[in-house]
Image (cartoon, rainbow, N blue to C red; front, side, top):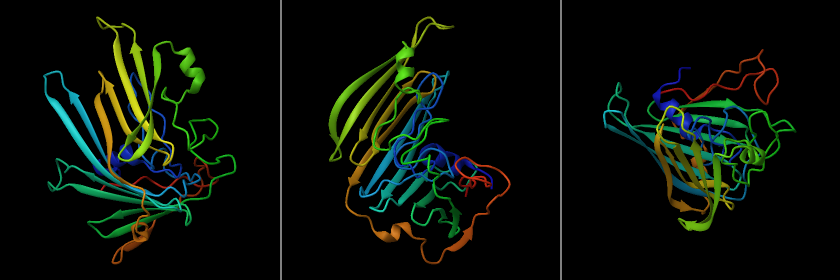
Length: 288
């Protein structure tokens, strides 16, 4: 399946994994490249779900980049995230119309069911549901997310803001300063904040380059509620939550709607995918 503009943006915003805690920032000068909310990380690996912490909320992500000629590019993505007490999650992402498309916004829905061990992708325009069967986690996977090549991490704790290096990495990098912002209430939920400032020494520029990352994490829901990244190389990226509710969502949100054609995603044997034996992980969502 090809990955179109819709699925590429979906992967950046909500690449699914059953570890419903936040992932670490990506590499590079700043802090871009992180997943956000309950669905993030690698596709095709099941983790222990976050249970007994239902919620629904809308996340709005805005990216702003200024080009050399002064042109300012702004992109906005809206995502509705839902999780029930069983740990099932649903992400509905609305993306702007593609330049080469029909001029209409596109919507992608991904449902993850840790009970049935499935990831289901809904294509509303075609009324097709593509179901990926996901194996259970291996014993060493444990609860929570797993850093690249590292041991499992507690999903209840916010990630290290230093690119996943952990405490040792922070001590060794004198150009990174972390500040505890305390706690505050965001949309009715208490969150703890952290700001990370990374200074890039002079190298081909007339002064040091400073990039900042700030995030607010809910220990109760085990998700990030707000994030801001300011990077001179990559622009400004913000994500904010709205309409947050901890009420139990409608169970039908996690089911395939009536009238949809159900397709089983093929299982590719003969390769060894991460977290599973003899099979590669299912492909990521394709474009619509």
